[in-house]
Image 1 (cartoon, rainbow, N blue to C red):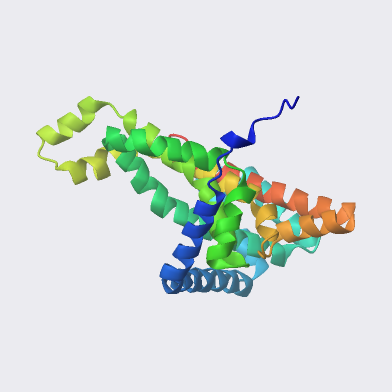
Image 2: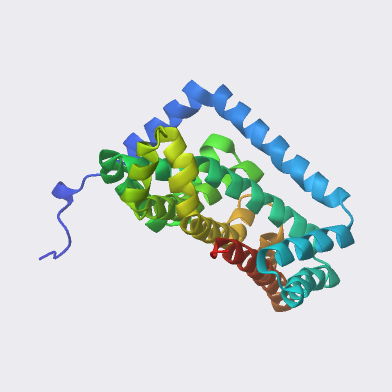
Length: 281
């Protein structure tokens, strides 16, 4: 007697998903290609700008930014020194490619995440509807949504940006909503009593008070974007993840460890700077 699940109760929606993706490609292929071309130009332009900047100037800018965030000369030298070591092991160009990918992905997270966080904080219905979507985005394995992204945009840097965006967006939306929800209502009521409209209350009262939480969400989004660089390399994105993947494929442990430590060093630099800006000043 079979103890398996009865086949008569099997239900699959795979064909429906495939038909929807096929329809999306046929109906909006030109628009998707336009979006892809625009993002690719932005990413390549940023990579070229970073390459055109002298390495010592980039390190100086990182040190200056770190000092401005932490007011610590020792920490500024330490973090810029970590990036210098990445160049010493011959991964400077790969570092710039990864930085460009993370910056573009994080910029899209900011453009999408903060407005959605404001929407969730101000509209309870939107919060109830969108929170489950954010839960799915955070828990869904990245290889699952790579399949439709590849069908829509093909191989290369652009699908890597969208895959990173899906993975890194939820923390920023959640923490933006959390920060705005924790603003003392009496402060916004006082601003309203002084004649401020809704937009002014949001811009001048709520967002400045929620800024530490928003920056914490940005920090988490950047960290999650960095954790996607190896997966992004599997679909054609260049950068430090490419060397990690090559080390796995060729069993070159040293090459994989060098690139992995470079990703860790970059994550430490970005984490310390964003955390410092997120603290009350």
